[in-house]
Image (cartoon, helix red, strand yellow):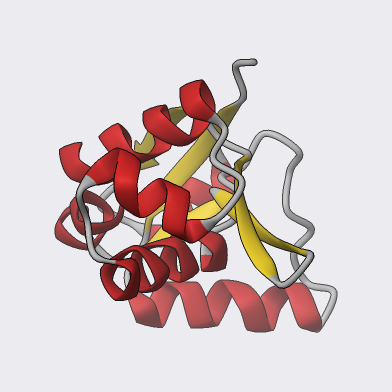
Length: 126
């Protein structure tokens, strides 16, 4: 399963301006616009860096049925995994589904296309 998700880099102020314009009906997001937004390349690299890419790959390949199983597969502590997965869930990269009192991670994005520009208007005008 390959799912490409477009990622955008936009300042907090520009993101707020964009959100307000959408809420007022002044701007309608295009279908090809990013679905995930980060404030900087650094924040994107913290969320989508090598360690988390390896985690996503393990989830895809091994399909763990609990965080405890994922802990064994990765060697990462459960608390660390939980924080990381909740962050990835906030961005829509994974979901955490509860079954039989267990959290089961599921990957929703496998590939990322990054879009950014020096001006907010360039993202909305393209």
